[in-house]
Image 1 (cartoon, rainbow, N blue to C red):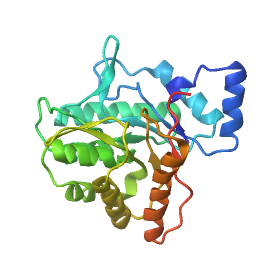
Image 2: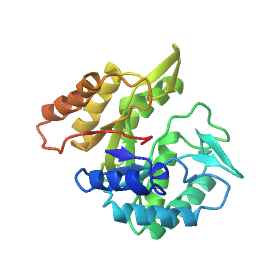
Image 3: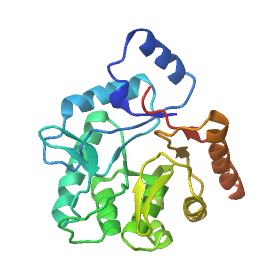
Image 4: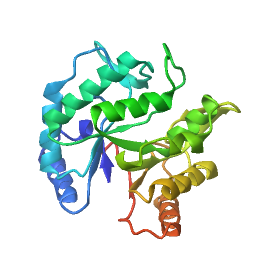
Length: 255
């Protein structure tokens, strides 16, 4: 299972005890929503210390966050694109290193969907690879985001995928999206995964080897048997690579 730590850190009482009972039985990963790695506001170190305690308490396997910014004086409630510049590489990598220092473990950053590239001075792939190298962190590989961005920004998804460093892949997300127009896709996590995204996931397994993969579905959630069909699709693609892997999991974000 995957949860956003922001939704659970301060939950106590009966719900807190029930949550702890689950995490004692089920492997847990955490995907943050508010760390604001690329934002202009100071890194929230008090929040990170709470995150560390939460990760330790629940034996969290991996903590990941978005390679984006989402706040300044207040939260923007959206994931804004970090400018693809050398200056932003150094700034963001320094904040990731500091976050890892506070939580006492490596973290993974997620390649995000974006719809504009303000102040761009380098390609998206070069920006991500530079941040990964300078921060010495892991990668949460979002397959759907690669596909969405490849349509919106007109690049080849498979070539882009294969330019990422295999050694840094911690786990992956796969999800659905919304077709706004022929040349515009919107990352929503509110629809079924489409065939080109499943194909891209299989390409990723073939190139990197099989890695843990999580199905994201944040709304328009279908009946459980329908949702489990997509989980089983992950199993089937993994099985075709003839590599053993623990069962994929379904994202639980809102408690």
